[in-house]
Image (cartoon, helix red, strand yellow):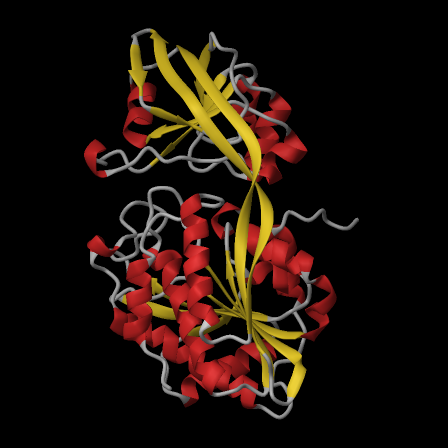
Length: 422
Ligand SMILES: [Zn+2]
């Protein structure tokens, strides 16, 4: 049996729907992946894990002075609610969180640029504000062609720094509010937090010779709101399925584990849960191979590697040997490789990024209608991973040392917001 990008793309088309963390669509995709994996793997199961979810039932923002206008907003999931009658406050545009802005923000309804990052949230919470506004998209977006993004205050924000009222709006509206000199506004938000279940799909092919050396494959199958995530990351998910099928017939020397992770888009929750639940076997995992984004027709291949310079040299040499164009570099990658590297398991990511103008990620344009991904391009990454996996598995002695460089360790610690050791 050979791998087939055509077959992979057919499965991708079948699963080209929005698959947000813990939704019934995410579970539907998990079940379909499990069904497909069952035909090939020695063992397949769904492993559930709890995630924080949010439900927003009411949201409102009205500028009340010096003009009166209501704007479309979406309340942050897992945010604090306002009293039913809402809150009124002075508006302040804190374009950055420098001291000069922090000094003027207290007790105001503030708007910031960009995403609500953890370090910003910490600063804002320390100052104490009435509410946080963010904006998304671009000021030239057409309303009927874009969405007012739904965002979430993640647990790594609210657990250490507390709850807060937060709303997201469109960039064009944010610009209008600032331009027209909004002084006061009225905000209402009803947002609820609750725990629900997300799931990983886990398949195993037992090795014929070195059962106790495990090569761990990963790809996340969830998507963000409004996005069918065909590029990010059903493409990687179906590539993994082809590898599973291939190795079920061409039995590997080492044990191979294939994990399709849920809730990656919410902060790598699936892989974090998996690593935690399987901590006692991690000493057997010799390498994690992650596939996150593939298939853009116009694009380029990269392989961020979380290991050592030696490993990077080895991966690069293999790509050259096979005549594959792929930029192998030592770096972290914001995906499910992180929890593995954090536990000392080296990881290689295979990705094909869309070229500028063909790289739709985390919005409604990541869909088949955008006509920017295709099976021929998907085959590029499929062939690269297949070749690489076959070579490392076929080696007498595992060619990648189980070691992570200090540079990568430091980046992983920062990524995971670990406290710096004194
Ligand atoms: Zn992704």
